[in-house]
Amino acid sequence: MAADAPRSNFIRQIIDKDLASGKHDQVHTRFPPEPNGFLHIGHAKSIVLNFGIAEDYQGQCNLRFDDTNPLKEKVDYVNSIQEDVRWLGYHWEGKPRYSSDYFDQLHAYAVELIEKGLAYVDFSTQEAMREMRGTLKEPGVNSPYRDTSVEENLKHFADMTAGKYEEGKAALRAKIDMSSPFMVLRDPVIYRVRFAHHHQTGDKWCVYPMYDFTHCISDALEGITHSLCTLEFQDNRRLYDWVLDNISIDCHPQQIEFSRLNLQYTVMSKRKLNLLVEEGKVSGWDDPRMPTIAGMRRRGYTPDSIREFCHRIGVTKMDNQVEMSMLEACIRDELNQQAPRAMAVIDPVRLVIENYPEGEVEQLQAPNHPNDESMGSREVPFARELFIEREDFRESANKKYKRLVLDKEVRLRNAYVIKAERVEKDADGNITTIFCSYDADTLGKDPADGRKVKGVIHWVAADHAKPAEFRLYDRLFQVPNPGAEEDFFSTLNPQSLIVKQGFVEPSLAQAEAEKSYQFERIGYFCADSKDSSAEQLVFNQTVGLRDTWSDEA
Ligand code: ATP
Ligand code: MG
Image 1 (cartoon, rainbow, N blue to C red):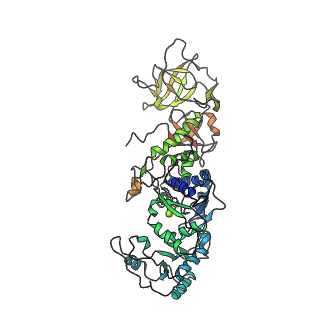
Image 2: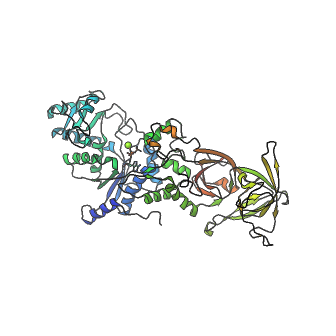
Image 3: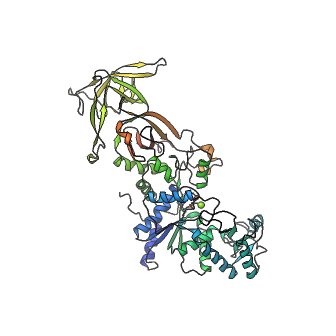
């Protein structure tokens, strides 16, 4: 299956219809993140949907920062979001847009609503407003400020804009219907006072438009045809349409909702991810355990694997929780085909081949991929002293154990057949060295006498291997839906990061950051982009060789 083959979904069907009927000549979508955190895998779903549609229909997709809440937003986030969208392989139409680009127009539209008697300044306290709003079962009641004259409202709003009211003392509300079954239509606040410095507009404004008012107008100003958002905005669509119906603007994009991505064993809200960072539960937004694009990238996920995941989960209106194994299958499938093989020992024990000449070093040829000759081969040094995985040796074992056992033979991957002769132990009984003999006539071929050697283990040459740190990752949380827990910190997995010190074959000294290798028999790993250097190699486990999630339930 081609990684980027578009799969049909209900949104693409709507677009097909709109193009066929001539409602639109060209599709124009947008991806509208709020710059209050790093992008996560949930955003990737929206990115692949919006940019993917623009690509497949030869349309356009804007990147727009929805920046109406200056207190929570930062330029750092603006930058990381652009980097992540680009890394995923998409490009936006023209320059990045900002909702704040439209603050002048938004303000003028607010004035237009006041002039039409469709908006008023309310001086009620927030608490009073909340009480007057009613509940799902009971209609709200009109604010005493609802019938203020147009002239007075214009003056009050001008005063608000001029900074004459403190925060929370005055708000501009749309005059819609206090008894609407849709709470969002009960005279929603559309402008509020905030004496805050804005990352784009500086100190120009002390009134800021609310999301619902801003979003629809920004869409319309940019000529968006299909405004795709997640299901929780279903009711807000009434307000989206009301605003555009009541101001003088020609364009009226269609809002379409789809279900958000929920992934098991992690959290997706930027607020919660920010808490993990702020409280030092992870090393940063790009910690390889985070479900952020930056974290996944550092861990060795590729743009292709993330796009493929978004295609596989599809786009529907049904809320559900996707299993982590689905995400991991995407990167595993790709790396199984494309990652070069290499040898690393993460929990080393020394092995000496007593009949191998002291001081001799052979450069053995090892294929970079068992099924793909075009990936070539590399030299791996072989010598008398090696390291193997501690768990690959036992003094005695039954037949199911296909590794090295005392008095038995095993094949060293890409090298010879060896036999374990005896062991040396320390005072505590731990094995310090395994002494072996080797059969010099078994390089790249079976033993001449026809005896069968079933097991294969990996190794590195002790004097040539490079020391390396290995970071093994497990699920960040211990429960499938940590977001639903009152104290989600208490469900963090204390074993989500395990650090091992071992060795890698010398060819890995030059491993490029973020490029994954299959460490034979262990898993997929890539050099860490922040902490790894030629002097101090650090490898992140991208994913294991097999699915360990499904069995565990
Ligand atoms: P968060 O709670 O993580 O802050 P958000 O919806 O507030 O999420 P925005 O930055 O406003 O985040 O989102 C930008 C776009 O990405 C929106 O169109 C939003 O619907 C979409 N999006 C965010 N989270 C998900 C998700 N989990 N699945 C699909 N789309 C998402
Ligand atoms: Mg948000």
